[in-house]
Length: 130
Image (cartoon, rainbow, N blue to C red):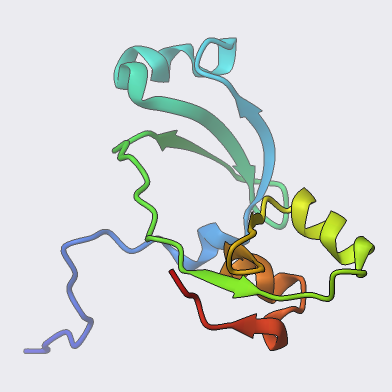
């Protein structure tokens, strides 16, 4: 009597060989090669693909299904204050183009931290005052 030590999973694991198959043809749900699958899967069908093995002797048909649609929730973006010299017009124009807001009472620009990081301006961050 032998016992199998293969892990069991509630999700079907794709065969490793399927990952190496090349896509030969992709069909939209309304096209001739996908109509029978459209009847079977209805509006959930995204596309049908014919995949060929490395030798080109075996064709595998796969379907892509839409299972779930959920709204994307974004995290609150942290804002930073940037101070630049008044005469630095090119940087001022760049900040305006990136959507930074000028706070004239505090004499700094307010913009998302990610934008400041991408612009290489984190060294110019100053404390935010109200």
